[in-house]
Image (tube, rainbow, N blue to C red; front, side):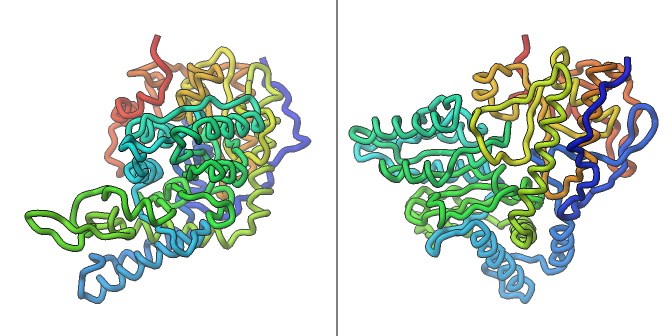
Length: 472
């Protein structure tokens, strides 16, 4: 059986990346013994470093030293680099004059930090938090653990969801109002989003602040705390083309200055006595220990590089890739594209789909082993949403960014078409819950210290299990 004919009317083969990324053009082995250029369509999980970011890191590494209290020249330089990076990152997301920019490990770290700063209610009970069921676990679990959050089931449309948020906030206002609304900037499952400024205005009307999970929004769209009114924003370097272990929490000072210090340790204190401790205010209060100077510098470099791009050009590039991917996949029999809201507009470059008759893990393994395409499969740390939409068995997610070329999209569409038409050509088994190639012949990179791909995947299985489909 031959592969189905795929319309090329809207093909994006010639569309070039907007910015070069490290690893672009890397050759990877296929199970048939050939090599192809790797198509990284998993940037929603971890984006490759922009070449400009890697160059900046290489430039500053010789200057790296201790920060904040060192008298040495390089210590003073590193301190200046770190604090300048903080200001650059805050400016990139439109921080207000009195906002704090706190360097963390990632979005999850930032949201857990904020969860410890939500003020208690007058009766001493934890401040109430409202959160939607569409959230990534990073913007759900911290609130459930610390405040017993109210989880609101989203509607079938954006309009219905906004109306539900208003109703929930209004009903609570007279008795026990919500202190905080936790909101996704863009879904990590579908790329869809809610009208941020509109929802912020609704929340403020009823006395609630808003924290925005910007992990999937910031790398794709410009956001300004000042113009939208968002009170707190969390995002990650590793999704913003700076995979060096830094994230940030940016937002209003009062809660952060009054909240319990996130880490107890050096750097967060003004004075320590046996009988008590006087804590800093400002970013230092929550940045105990030696900070990630290189991570902060890398993230600032990524922000500068993204800021230099024309926002309209970024949107046009991403829309062309996404629209072609959606239309190409929907033209293939047995393929379904996942959606949350029927009236969503301006989604970012994240597309999730299923192929009837094939486990999502098998689809992902096939795309890698036989086509050199990297995607994500599972439930994407968004179990409530996948369950509500009827995808408890998981799905496959492809995601794009400024380093994505149109040719990669065409390869994915053609590969899925071949899977539906002819099935996989290699043999696959499930080992420790993961789909792998039977007797995988692909070599691992020389000098990596790895014995094989199967052993490598199995090492992370326990940690990954929570985002994989439930076992029968």
